[in-house]
Amino acid sequence: MTNRTLNDLPRDYARGQRRGIPSVCSAHPLVVEAALRAALGTGRDVLIEATCNQVNQEGGYTGMKPADFRRFVEEIAAKVGFDTSKLILGGDHLGPNPWKALPAEEALARAEAMIDAYVTAGFTKIHLDTSMGCAGEPVALPDAVTAERAARLAAVAERAADGSGFEAPVYVIGTEVPIPGGAMEALDHLAVTSPEAARETVEVHRRAFHKAGAAAAFERAIGVVVQPGVEFGNENVVVYDRDKARRLSATLDDLSQFVFEAHSTDYQPAEALAGLVEDGFAILKVGPGATFALREALYGLDRIAVALDALRPEDTLEAAMEHLMLAEPGNWARYYPGTPDEQRLQRHFSYSDRIRYYWPHPHAAAAVARLLARLDGRRIPETLISQYLGPLYPAVAAGRLAARPHDLLIAAVQRSLAPYDAACGAM
Image (cartoon, rainbow, N blue to C red; front, side, top):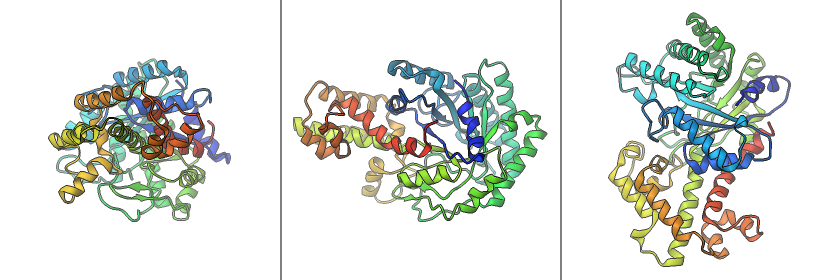
């Protein structure tokens, strides 16, 4: 593993080379497999990131600690034949977010333990996110407090890196950080980060890192999280407007150490992703968009199984997921407002894709396994592919894609990721 690709991003941008890298933020094995398979034979690096809620020293919602996640990704790489020297592992939103209901000192102590576990396990891209308030604090903190806490975590990361045997990490900083997983309300516009705020973010972190004895860490900071005006809610997507971000993009002329990292780029059209990279948002985060595509394909296969075998409604994957989410509403109830019917639609079809939190659950995994076993080895008529997996039909009809469940699922995820690779160019 090497951070050469990441370190090159600011240099390339300063030289007028508009390239980037997608950051695939997912712990779903099929999403990881799809990303790695897409890069086979291209020679490009793949950046896979785990978020603080997915993976942490306490297991996160996946049950994986950072070292477990590393093994998980490397096992998939070995299965598909991907060269792990081309694999970059990152930690996303690393900070007190999983414990923000606790007092700040307790939450930060747990965040320190998480940072140590990530860096010790060989995660070499670290996004420091201390922007959220903890118990008794405002929801959003002053920049100086955010930077002080980020510097504190960076110092922990530096100590962990010294004895890890892995390359020293690079850092992404920022104070205008979107919440993990997308917005909870309908959106029609967003305020783009001002140039002045972007410059102040860098300076306040520079001062805080030096004060904390982490100046060397700041020298390896390569990205700043800002708001370029992209986001998605449960039902809509705010698309990137280059004109509105032009002044923000121009600040990179004065910040040659950095590129911007764009969060919540899921569901952006291909031309918007290309515009983001052209404007210096060289690290494009995608996560829910990939699992949304996976869910679409799983539900398409579910409808194919209904057509082939005349399944009863209660025997479908969708019914199994509905039963599970109603029995265990903790991952969606606070995020999906509205009437019972509106909530039912959101549980399955929201852009926020909070159903993704349920795929690791034993009941969900068993339901998916039953569906795939039902279809395994069977001929799936092209007409049903056209009806229920329409975007994949041309490749199936042309003989480029086998109408097998696993192949169809991988192709659906790769289709969602392909615009990112195109926008970022060959690395």
